[in-house]
Length: 215
Image 1 (tube, helix red, strand yellow):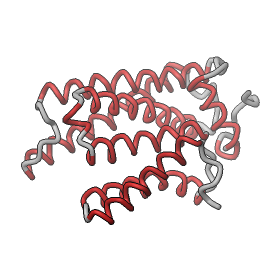
Image 2: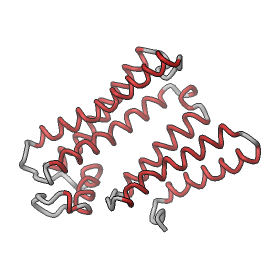
Image 3: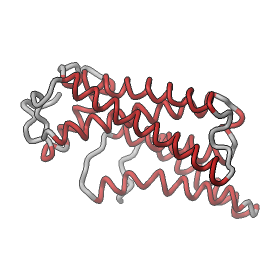
């Protein structure tokens, strides 16, 4: 089965979404059913894409993606967590920025084919940081456009909401970039640098110039 081998947390989230979908259909709550189905499909998409292109993604990172999608789409929209808890949006922005910081680092490192000495470690980390912040900024521009053109309220409190989101983006991006810097410096005893090392090791074909085997 293509969805085998996931964490228990991932299976629990998928089971919760299936139950919510069934209940929504029985009660005729179509909006809840739509959100549950959309969340289920979106949470499975990264795994299916990774399998389709034969890219190994560490299990903790896949689990984090599933949790993020569940928290943002299902809890945030179906159960209105964005309105109930002011910090929910900030927390998700920061978590997403950490992920984008890691993705930015892996992307830059991939362009260098795993050559640790193609550029200083701080330079690669800085590009990773900028990549993640740029993604966060692009999202804020999207929210502003939706509010301006369609009269939505994605920015909620306006400038304060935008700036708080950007601060969270910057902090998350720094954590992700710092993990990449730690990886390049050989600090892979645990945490995010170890995840990067696992990704590089299992996708060795794209990192041909990586000079040594990662632990």
